[in-house]
Length: 343
Image (tube, rainbow, N blue to C red; front, side):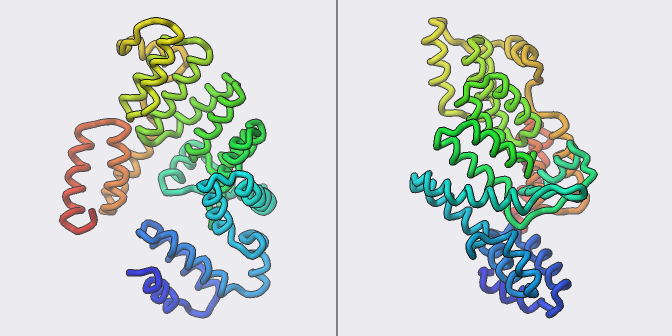
């Protein structure tokens, strides 16, 4: 169905009673969140929700969701477009307005906190790691990514200290947002703050959910080791990163180490890799707690016969464990999805 057809169907479901209709629209937004045209549908539902608001509530919503008559997500899209056009200073003006708006209107209180999780996995990981006592409020917009974009602009403008402070705010709005942790690492690289760099790499590994994320963490560990002149362990981490995902910069980084040390670069032994991790107080591989949460979600999806969720979580689980039994299950459900036309 097209976006227009879906919205026509949604409009037909309105009752005219505000409280009932808002719950209904929220359920429709959740229903179409994974659709191919999810962004268009979400935007159209947001417009419809605004349209049916009583005047007093519209005033409150204007305060929280609009800047100079534009919805926050529209401003965010414009800022992103300007970055693609290499107009960083112009984008900065927009992201600064977004950051100020969010900081003023989405503050944590004694009873509730705004958190912008992008999917159920991030939500469940947060519940597992933080055991929150406050009510979790999910904003309409991805506040974490909006703030992160402002941090990116600050870093591009060579304001790394400010960028680090802003990106830490992005993490507060979504502590599972690995994009923010990686950008924070770039800040500490720029500042040559080795201790903070190592700390944020370890934090990222705690919440990494894909092989690519783990690989990038190990590349950052390699960078850190070069900075502190621990070249042998840098080689270990760079080679280990390639087990999880290809990284085009690794050969160049290894050549750089060879240039510095004048030593032949050879793949490390497993014992050498394990020693490198132990030296920095880490274990190799994905966080076992993350794998445990994903495993539990996969089991729940199987019990509920939710095929898209089953495939999603089994794919995540296999990516982190490389378990052949998981791969066998994943292949079986992939075949089932093809038979049902859901591939």
